[in-house]
Image 1 (cartoon, rainbow, N blue to C red):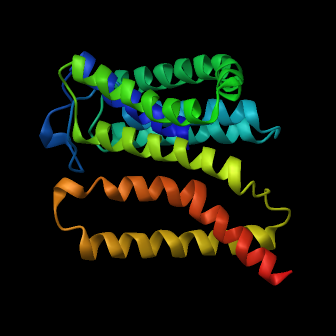
Image 2: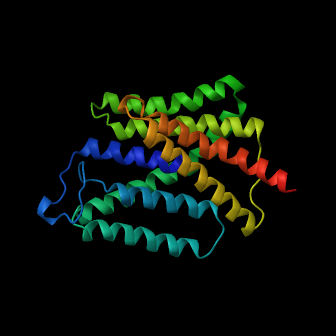
Length: 232
C-alpha cells in the first residue's frame, strides 16, 4: 500500500515536471485533469506488478501482471486521454521506480529497525513531508499530493503502532480472509458515511485520510484480533 502511494506521488510529480499536453479534448471519452506524460495509470500499474512479481512466488503472476499492465495502458489510449508515448513512458518509469525500491528496501528496512521508538515515528512522518516539500520546490504542489503524503504518514505511524502493540498474524485460510474482508469493508464504510455527514469544511477534509491510514494499519488489525480471540 505504501509503495502504491509512492508510485501515485511519483506519477503526479513527473506529470508536473514534463508538463506535456494530452490529446485534444474532442478525443476524450472521459473527463480528466492534468497533463499527459507519463500516464499515471500505466506508471502505477507497471510499478505495482513488477514489485509484486518479486515478492510472490507464483508462475502465473508475471504473465497475469503483464496482461494487466497492457490492458490498463491500452484503455488510456482507447479513451483518448493519452498518446502511446505517454503510456510507454509510464510503464518505463513505473518499472524503474519499482526496481530502485526493490533494491533499496532491505537497507531502508534495516535502518528503520535500528532507530529508537520516537525516531521511527519521526521518520514515518518526515519522509512523506520531504516528498511534499519537494513538490513545493517544484512549484507544482497539488491537493492530491498533500492527500497522498497524509495517507503515507498515517500508514507509517499506524504500522509502527500495530507492530509494537498488536502484532496480528496473517490469515491462515480463506474463511478467515473472508471474515477479515467483511470487517474491513464495514469499518471503511462507516468511516466514509461519517466523513460525508460531519466533515463539511474542506479545511478539515484531510482528517479522512489520516483516519483511512489508521484504519487499514491499526484499527482493522485490532478488530480482527478481538473478534477472532472472542470466537476462540
